[in-house]
Length: 343
Ligand code: TXA
Ligand code: MG
Image 1 (cartoon, protein in one colour):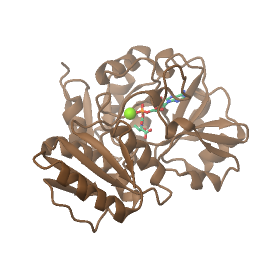
Image 2 (cartoon, rainbow, N blue to C red; image 1 turned 90 degrees about the vertical axis):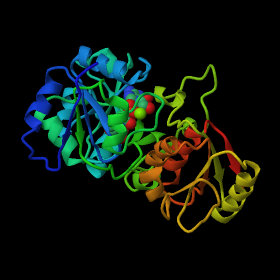
Image 3 (spheres, rainbow, N blue to C red; image 1 turned 135 degrees about the horizontal axis):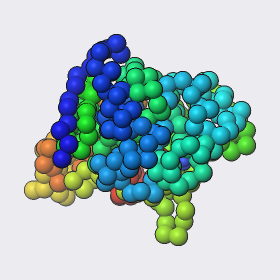
Image 4 (cartoon, rainbow, N blue to C red; image 1 turned 30 degrees about the horizontal axis):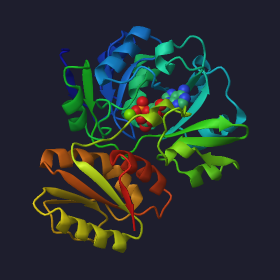
């Protein structure tokens, strides 16, 4: 057990960054907020430090990490080549919730990239994340700061629940605004293939690059024998204790179906996740806002809240009717382990 210090930070000028940066530089672990979700950071150049991340999360060793830098000029320290398409994307969307897979430099330890020849790079926009990278003086390797398989943390209290005793420090920087993890893309010629949908949407990217595809495993399960483009695609994710079913399609029809299902499950503690303006007669109803931007922001917090409320089944109303729909769908369908009713 590590003695975990929790430190509340509101400004990027906080003097605490001096010792927090030193923890990273010296090989320790610090959980920190980003604009997407909280990250679990270590010195990306230290094999020992990076191995501690995998141990703290219980993460499979074949699932590579994202390396976080604070400026595009730091790319040359970790990436061997930066194709034109990547430069265009960084210029358009960084700092921000976009991760680009690039050919890696040899100086990165194999543990960071899980033995792959590529490295995933992101320049976060959250001032606390940026201040931590600057204070550390090294790129920070960081997955989401949850125990493997649990919903990603969007509040410090989620990190405290999962990581106390496993990391040296947790920075409490309040709520993450995007709520789902960054968009991950690989460069294909002069375009990209989206490996994980997130805060930067397909139509955002299409404003900058012509050829944009969405990898088939974003919306379908990885079957045995298939090798996914991104190792993270094959792992079960975001699972709360309750049994989740997604009711997907027209919002009103989905609500009607959920009312039927609540009746069928009488006697079982039931939770519903829904858009604003709908009412259901069950133990707990969590409102996800009026669109998928808000749904994304609240999704992981709601999945964790159902656990504390002790519900056994959850019905999630979902409609993929805006640009953010794909990011929400990807997380929601995984949390439901593929149990989706289309209406
Ligand atoms: O928003 C985010 O991206 C957050 C914050 C902390 O930055 N980080 C995050 O990391 O979500 P993680 O480890 O939970 O997810 C990283 C994803 C995984 O699905 C992993 O398989 C994929 O990125 N990935 C990492 N390196 C890769 C590579 N070289 N090639 C393909 N996929 C890669
Ligand atoms: Mg994760």
